[in-house]
Image (cartoon, rainbow, N blue to C red; front, side, top):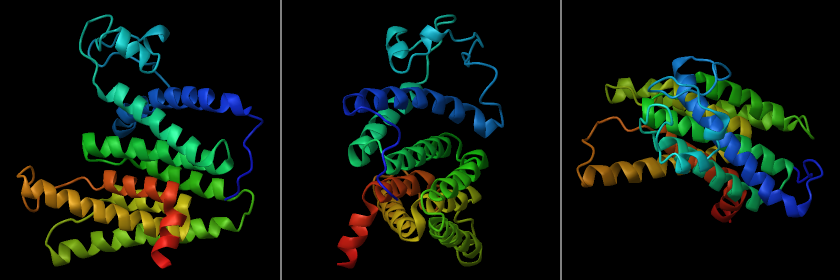
Length: 262
């Protein structure tokens, strides 16, 4: 990918603008996380309290700020607001800042931030519902291919190869697990998430992401077994580990690959 500047963003405004956009998109991600797994529209109705269904006023919907001013409670019914809402917004701002620091306001930065948003949504839905919705991963695969078309259309071939190999690895695991271990090893959501990473990162990038994801999942799984928080054979969502691998591969994949090969 190139480093062409996306738009004429003055250097002094890049950080404030980036933080504001990330905060707003973090708020929108909360809507997606709440509604996409249930097959609901993310456009209408507007934001509502999940307890009393009262519409949320615009001044009560300012990312991070409104949660603090309201004391973490709905203005209408005083029911507690889940900490997931400000946490997703804060993580989106933090990772948006990391992407901006790493790539600047460039095409690379734009592509990386789009992928980060998709990974946050996939991670939270997998943790909350043990589900990675197709309405996240399938449009994500298409977006990855679309972004790769410019400025060099042939780059989409690397995305196709990455999507096929990334998804194919987990499809093979899902196919073999019942035959070898007698139970499901990977879900369809993990397969499509890996394919989405391949569409964005290409063949080498998705291999780095898959390797890191498997290593991280193995280490965390062993630690949970050792401290007694998980029993052997108990389900552990893999989407967050694959998303972590995708994040690291997005930010430092080429450097890690060069170090490993060199």
